[in-house]
Image (tube, rainbow, N blue to C red; front, side, top):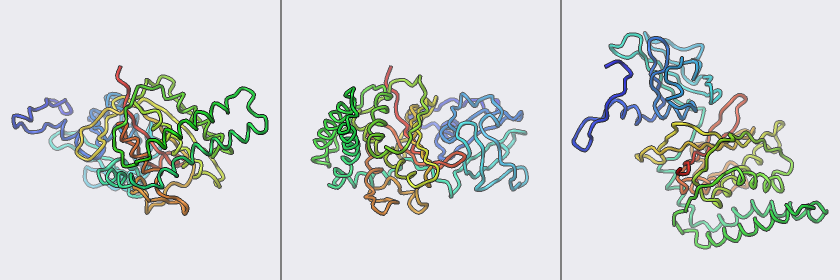
Length: 364
């Protein structure tokens, strides 16, 4: 069998040993396999997620089509090691990584590349501990008060504009009506916040929802901030709960606007993309699920303090003196209830804060 060729799947129920493909997919670090001619032959799911490229897109391409190896590295025999170094990637920007190369035994010219996020760079996904911690906030009565502040801010701003005769087309009046109805529905759902009944996600076109969230933000907490949009126009329907999705986006937009306020460069960006082949595990030991719909809220603020970045989605953890530490815990819970995950990262050049949602596509 040629090196890098797919390994047949064993019959595990009959006691067969896991194959190479299964071991590679299960590893919690990003791994690429490189042929003697310098082309990529394999990329495990962690590498797909880290580099924002599918294995199909990388296979057969030169390594530099996915990333540029660090210019300086400590060499150890035939291997290569560079720790806590900047690595340029084709689709994920500049990342701070530990970069390790090693030859494949008995396969001259073949090598593997392992990529780890450096300790100074945080990319936080879902863990079992975080899921448990988020549910611990369910009984907090303060969550309700926290969550109705976002739509109330938009309602107040719209009402002020109407008072000055600024609503000839009735758009602001309709916005107020929609948000009041949503607050009522939110209160109904949160009267007993220990209610753990599952959401009922439905196929939705997310662009009208994103437009509504953006208008609510601009009428209230983002009145003095420009929210840039970088959308993939061909995005298919997404499997979400409308109200939960709006809560998530408004929370993340509010966090982004608060983060850039007072900064010289105030940039808030909404992006969408379709990530072919993207599949991730939503909890420790859980099977990988296809989550190809990516939605990011980026801001040019300073990011989370290093001492809390690992616990950013835990309840009652906040980097703001007046913060309750409830908003991101609820974001995490609602995204998981819709079958997706939310991640925090510092990425790009110049570096920006990224909250990345990975969500399921609606069935065709």
